[in-house]
Image (tube, rainbow, N blue to C red):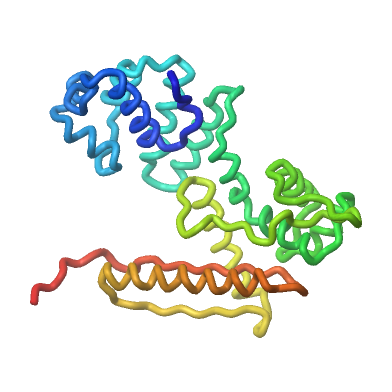
Length: 279
């Protein structure tokens, strides 16, 4: 195959590229043709699968593997990727994600996975930011860990340092201390995937603990419950994005940091959707 399946963590993206590749070589590769080959009623069902509006069932999954002539290792990776993408909850997603990564070709590097790895543990980003204000030469792991909230074992500090060095997110300054290579690391407005979901879950757990343990005056908490339309929801999301950008500008201008903070913004539903009221 011209493309490598091991570069993907979303089976729909892989299928789109793989099918486009084949259609470029032969116009016979229409959605109708594919549907007939894998036992689906219409080509429209292929579009629904590729857009995420329909699931890829086991029988069609097997037929896709045969149609694309995937090797045994590619077949196993594809199957695990489908189950990962279609997992019902975070716990099931974690199981299939681990299986997917473990089943990939050992000589292939999955760039997306390396990028997500930074968000797989809350303390990776926390340690990186702490290097901005604490002098650390790379030996005092246990001592460095006591400066974190909550405290980190020396082994986890070492683990974080190893990852940050591998991803080239930190480097030694002229004085021999580790510092962040760039001031701000951001995911942009949207990021999806197992590692990101795991990161958010960990941060929410820390936020819950902070409510009980961090003194008043060293934290800020605020919330609002609202009944709004989808149109207003999109406007609120955009306002949060703009606010985040303004906060990043404040951080960029900071020249004397004293402490590492974490700001978490969440917007999620309390109720199911209702039908729009007719006027």
